[in-house]
Image (cartoon, rainbow, N blue to C red):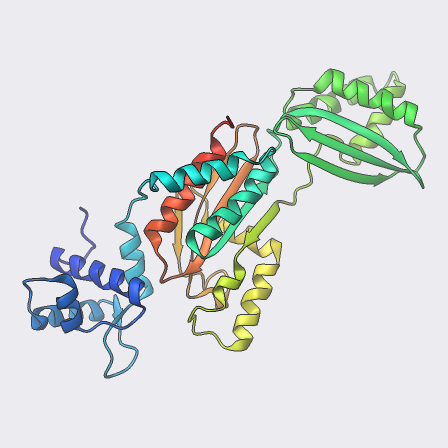
Amino acid sequence: MTFEEGLSGRAEDILRSIVRAYIETGEPLGSRTLSKLRNSALSPASIRNVMADLADEGYLAQPHTSAGRVPTEKAFRFYVRSLTAKPMPAADRERVSAQMNQEDTVEARIECSSRILTDLTRNVGIAAAMPATSQELEQIELLTLSEKRVLMILVTRDRMVRNRVVALDEAISQDDLNHLRNYVNHNFAGWKLGDARRELLRRIEEERAAYDAVLQRLTILYDKGLLELDGNPRIHMEGASNLVGLDLHLTRERMRDLFRALEEKKRVVELLDRFLEQSSGELGIQVGLADAHPAMKELSLIGLSVNLPGGLIARIAVLGPIRMNYERVMSSVMQIGRELAGPRP
């Protein structure tokens, strides 16, 4: 075990006990109560001395003069570093697998993961599908609409579907659109989207002098985003109402600010991007989110990024109070990550 700098093994052991007890009860702890909880040979006086040292080091705070001590953000960070994600109980794993396998598409599985995380942890479950140019093309469909508009439908091999309506300067007939669709599907089905876009541009540039009619029309659609995913991640979030009953020490106005922040998808994406920078499958934990938003000071985020088989990147996370059951949340996030990353049966 690696000891925290400046702390003895005894102090670390007592600090872990304090954090665990506070997570369980939410109440300040005194030395006598802690001595009974630990069933320790240490006397309350000895524990009191250690707690005084921990307070001096910034690990404990005293809400009121006559009250016991509570762990600070620094204490929770120490506690989290000492944890490892344990496997979920077999019954829970089987239930999660059954729920995930009911979904037919990767997007549905990602959306389902946010619901499951909320159910398992009673916190806020977040799941985001991050568009990636490494997704492989299954097919496109092009449909003419009124007023010189075209519906471009993009289907990738992981069953993700994206629709985009574009306006053109000149109308293109449905017969011409069918010809363009067949050209793209014949030449680029199975290609990664980024590679297909680059190759299509190369062909357009190479054949520009020949003024090929197909490539001329493809140039128009290319400029409108053909074979390109929109850059907006699909965000799924469940359980925000679970934050209402928590004692986050927020005024009514700050609580409104918190919910406004969570309603802004851009801010949620920034939160995931900022604190889940680890490699795929590696758990990221951020204790205290004041840097992201003042109203998130007493919240923590636990999550990870997952490279899915079809090239899509998913980010899943649990947002909850600093006083959360970290071990359960860590295990839940890791299990959902494994389900997403693995092939469907």
